[in-house]
Image (cartoon, rainbow, N blue to C red):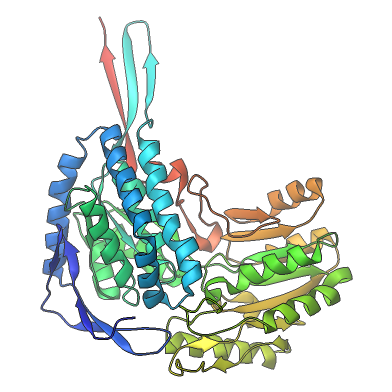
Length: 481
């Protein structure tokens, strides 16, 4: 871990750019100590980033798909070689356990870069032919695109957003969350060292003020946001002034339906992973666990026993299962939500307490928590908590489970556990969510689209759909007579 406070500046055209503005203190979630000061980019710095990106993009767009793909694949290899280094930075950024960063978040970014590098080599248009003419349509880049990231998966978000944009021939400006500025800076440097032309990937630091300036900047063609619903509404309004394209990946309150025929060991494993991975700070987590009445008692006992044995503490320790939450303020919010759930009638089956591990007494730790006897109208069931809090609900038949699972304005993810193949197809088709996982959860390979329905947003990360989102269609008609 860092022993001294460093200054984090925006990264523009291959170099760090100082700003005359204020700064934000960056805390290490596991200890609460300040480990960096993040300079807030000024409008002047943003203008410099857009100018550098625009100049670089014009040249980058002239590269063939094969040339761009080769550079991105080489950069993906470089990121894989730096996986351990990036995972350590991810721990300092988020407070999640090292094993999760090293095996999940960080390599998933390199996977995305490799996928889009390969995909763009064969990504073509459509040819049309008539008696006296031919026509063709092709995908063309938008120009300068921007991403505004959340704090829970900074490495993944940086690359899920920039990889398809760069592959398509765009330049990219990323504003990481002000709470997680570290790993994106290193990613940009590694990619440039691997051959990505400077100016194509710029990092702008700051809070909602620079985010607003990015959304309103006339030189930026598209915004991709990962964040909350209210932030998404503001982004849409701010981007409307220049008719920017917008992709929104917003919050969730996903259901996980565990049917009567489910294997209890498998169901417990999936439900716990879908709630406690990354200390519950995952937008697609299945925090509403619907369990068939016939197995509810046995499954709850199994989950409580296993959850109570999970170790909370130093994110870098190999024997620790749950790391820290992102901030003191967020920890307080999670604790208040748990208490409100109990006040509304939920039973605290396990967890619910703040933890002060030895040597990390100032960190933002909480026990993984299971609330049973929950009802649909409770606030803990309706609203996103974004912490390691599972709400368990009971159902009696498939129709009831689907109806209650869909009774939310969110629609990011959903899960189903059953051994019945026909039921799996039937129920997954009825779930109102952008992603449905059957007998698994939160598995998102780079060629599978990820995104939400209803208030969870629109547009897709990953897959060839993302290339479409960072491009426009140009049709050409050529007369042959």
